Image 1 (cartoon, rainbow, N blue to C red):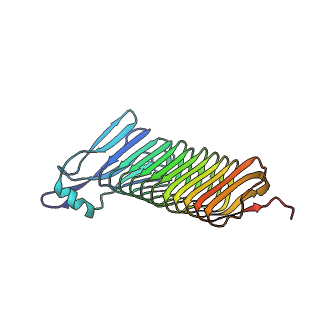
Image 2: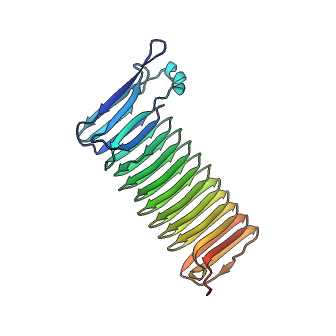
Length: 300
């Protein structure tokens, strides 16, 4: 309990009595931490300051909702930034329900969590996830903050941020992966996607390292290069940069591709060549192009 000018910061705890298939959290200044553990029921702990910072809790037909009340308090708005009021949600390791989390100002973290699907929206704060298994889709958006994902298994993965780096390592997507960021850059490493990969970035580097798509790979960058190591695809690879170099190693056979490569300002080691069934398109306005293949199609 915390006392401040007749205010009390009180820790609330709640344990679900039955099965829970849908968890909806809408927080304001509180961060959100979700942990998978050896428990039988979902448990949640959070903080309230009566009259200044309160939540409305409802549970009905396997659906749980915890939504921040719209209480205007100058006192709380000034001092909440100095308090650690992160709410913690503990779910069974085999939890297969839906997690729908929205945070206005605070970091969202998940570790060792299993879900049916996952949706996170953060207005001002980073999103971090590690060891997540989802039988459905994962959708993440941070208006102002980075997204950092490690060891994620899901169907579709969509991650976007208006201002912040997107870093993804050890992604296993049964369908597609799509990432967009306005300012910060994108890094995707040690990952495999069954269908298509699509990366869009306005300011910052795009990096691939040991990444493979069963379908196509498309990466577009307005201000920044596209660099890669052992980038593989089952079909076409399209790389476009307005201002930045395109360089790296494609994990594949050069003769499998019909190549179209051009730059307005910079060296280009490819040009237009080949008659393969797959397309490699690499174009930049200002920057060089230097692309090699793990197998150039010639006998060793």
